[in-house]
Image (cartoon, rainbow, N blue to C red; front, side, top):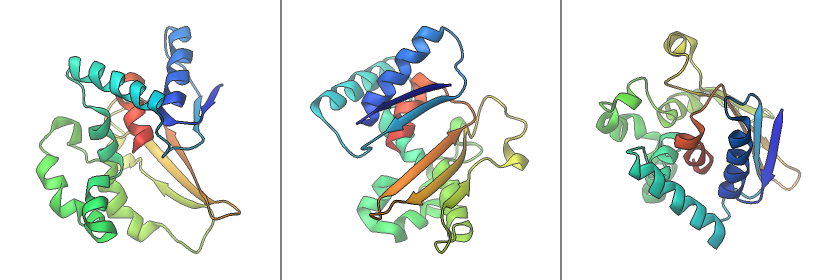
Length: 179
C-alpha cells in the first residue's frame, strides 16, 4: 500500500507521482488523499500549469478537459444542476465522436445514473461507474473510475472516496482529482 496526502490536489498528485517514480513500474493500492480539494495556492497553480504544459506538449488532454469528463463544471457554472442534468442531450452528442469518449464519459454516466441510483436518505451515498456489460472487454481503456462513495461529516462537510481500477497517472490523475 502506498498512502500519500497533501492539502491541495496538485500537492497530493506530486507526492503520488514521486512514489510512482520510485516504483519504476506499476504501483498497486496507491492511496491519494486531498485534504482541501478546492484550495488553490500559488504553488499548486504552478504545479498544475507545468503539468498542463507538459500534457499539451505531448498532445494529451489538458487537466481541465479531463476534469470536465468527470463533472461538467462549465455546465454547472452556466446553468446549475438543471444544465448539468441536460449533459447527455447537450454536451455529450458534441464530444462522443472522440475515440476516448466512445463508451461514454464519467459525466455521462453520472447524469444518466445519479438521478436514479443515489438515495439521498441513505448514508453513505454510493454510485458505481464501472459497467460490466460495457467495460468488461476493455481492461486497459475506457472507464477506469469504478466507484464513488460520498459521506457527510458531522458538520455537513462532504467526504468523497473514488476508486480507480487503474489509471494512466501522468495523463489523467491531476484532471481526475480536479474533476
